Amino acid sequence: MKPLRFFVLSMCFIGLSACQTWDGMVKDFESIELPALNNATTRSAENLVYSGDCPAVDAVEELQSLSEFTDINNQSDDNLVAKVDITNLQSACSYDERSVTIDVRTDFVGTLGTQGRAPASFSYPFFVAITSAGGEILAKEVFAAQVNYDAGQTTYSYTEKLRQIIPIETKARGSHYKVLVGFQLTPDQLAYNRKMIAERIAAEKAQKEAEEKLLREAEEQKKTAFESGAQTAQEQAAKDTIYIGRPVTITP
Image (tube, rainbow, N blue to C red; front, side, top):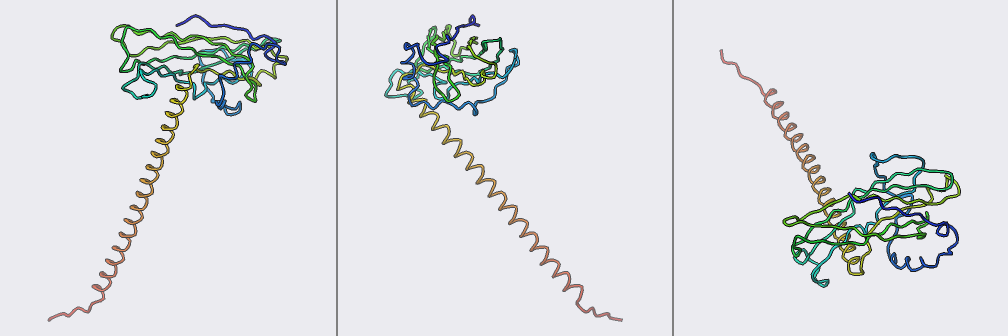
């Protein structure tokens, strides 16, 4: 487990921007659809202390994975060097009079590809950003996720702990902010992630449609079997009626 990562947001990030050094950070998020505050996924944080209404914490889906290939023009499993994913994101917060402290825990899970060779070491840039409820980026800091593979090892994981302190005027404003986590990707890496997400959604949709089709077919078979059974029963009942009503000759 790595030591606690820690940074404090200056008040200039919360009010009108007097910190022009952060202007360029917005470009890192171009064309990324930031999740709305009211759509944030609820995550468990049993191992952390909870106090008050916490700012939402989430990973940006399109930036949640980073894959490296030997050839950017051939992003297939056969050319995969290594990949790493952000998983198991947990959070909690506490308040004092003028700030909210957010503790974040997340796992980094690395997988060595067919073109990767252990022992090997990779350093992956990831960010923690603070946004307003409307998605405006107020602050961002970049860290490095260090993934080390020993000889014969193909997977590696570790837990990162981070702490952010956001100055606030009142406790009620704490939930107006959001913490986002993700990797710093190149345009090619972002395009690959989007392609993978689109393929996954299409596969899930196809599977759902196939399951619904099988369910409809099963219901039709049940209906047909019931109707066939009912018709057979009616035909048998008719035969029994004819047999019972037939005159019987008794020979002395």
